[in-house]
Length: 156
Image (cartoon, rainbow, N blue to C red; front, side, top):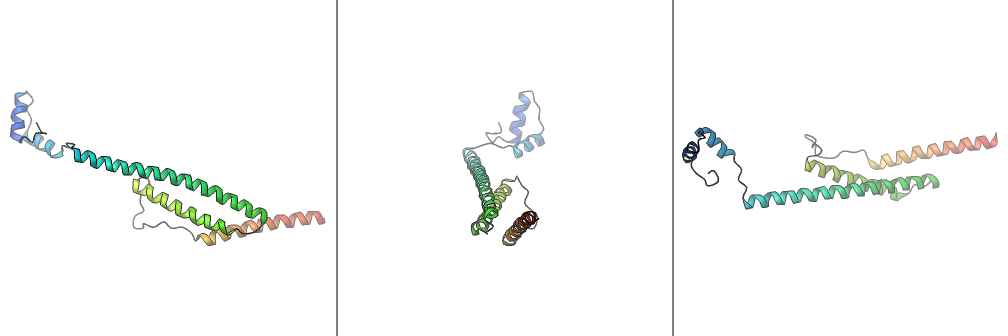
């Protein structure tokens, strides 16, 4: 009845004949909030679900890339510790990891998994260059301290 665009009074009469009396306000409210799926609406939802599927696939790929970058950085830092020389590639890998994480968070926010910060849409991080050099400096100091202890033990 509603799908055929019948008037409210006609629906009321038909409902009364079937033994289900309905008020005009109830019928009008039902018609107002009724969702009848048409072909175009199916296409609309299909396109939106395809976009969501693509975004979820992107998230999975970003997660794999982030994991790979973490292992690369870990290997580079271990190599730096062994040789005690700074490898320029490490800083580039950290920068790349930062951008990957930013994109990952942005996609999650677009999907609604992570709430978007109010008033500030940018992803704020510490200056990576200074952070990398501080970590390297701390590690070098730790290694030099251990070498000094070994030399002191040998000399004693």
